[in-house]
Image (cartoon, rainbow, N blue to C red; front, side, top):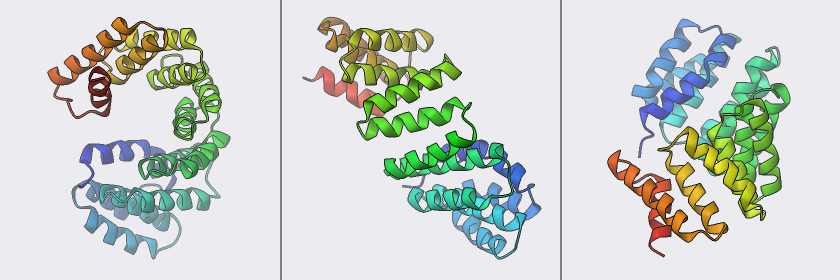
Length: 249
């Protein structure tokens, strides 16, 4: 299935810094505009840009990666993103870090947490004050079941931005798995308070309730998540599926 254009818009927005790095050449701009609507044509245009040197070549690589993402080829896109970041030797850390982070996102979508973590680490090394990069690495550490590492990254992200819902939920999950349900409850409850209709927050707080032995409250959170999912047309959301599975037990 072709990746939805909304996801490509996310990638385009995240790469505003990259566009600055390649100085938005006309051919590059046209290629990027084409990536969401006709990725095959954008990929061909990117190959032409890559035959040039300097900024045009960098722009071609960037557009190639975006087109590959639009074609549901995240593993290939991730490799191009990472190679582009490696080649941006003359660019500042503020320009290279987002490219490494986008490589991390693409590797994560491709199901390669080890490579994603490596890319996020490169981004963190260049912009340690960017909380989202630590959230990215925390997600990968959680997938690798390195829960202490995930908790550490989530805590550092929250120190930089105390209102990051995803970081709260990652730290809650880590503390729950590590045997600290009371600490997990604080983060999960804060996440629900900040975003009452967030399905993932409700599902995680339900898990924490269950870890605390409060089955009734756990069921209430999972049912609430299902009700919100149905009311907003999100029945297929992974969090809704998880809530449905818990309630069926």
